[in-house]
Length: 232
Image (cartoon, rainbow, N blue to C red; front, side):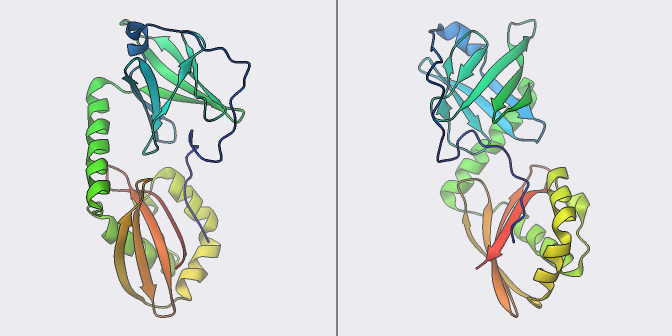
């Protein structure tokens, strides 16, 4: 059994080849710098647009940054996956206020964050990078996991401690998850294993009659943004 509010990934192999008909153009560094910023999608995922040595890069959440190339002054494309990034609605400084990810037949807008909010997001990303390097669990993730497991076993999840997407997924899958957790018996131990490259804290959760490997993602406000498990 697996449950997680999945975010559409720009980089998820195997990748589809980009449309060979697309023609890359050249834009100067001043123009490219207009697009630099942090954009938040409706799902809550952040798209980071950065500029490195005149090369624009996109990074979705904790995924690897990938180069994107201009085909016009508003439309860019990566070469490793079939998608497009469109920048729209310029502000009074000539900077786009919205990014639209076109992928898989879907159009997913992302609003540009203001400088103060973008700094908070950047600080959180830096904190994750350190936590991943040091392989230390996010503060509160073990307690949140224990509570989630105990609530699921009783069939009474606390939806207030979950992101909207995870709450919806849990409601839909509760009839399958609750008996699976309950039949494992009493919770015996929760042991931190690692921080995954996608940002999850990975735990070994042992019960009287079995064990699960759990992955849990916490949002900055302490809620469980996403989670999944499988037999260990």
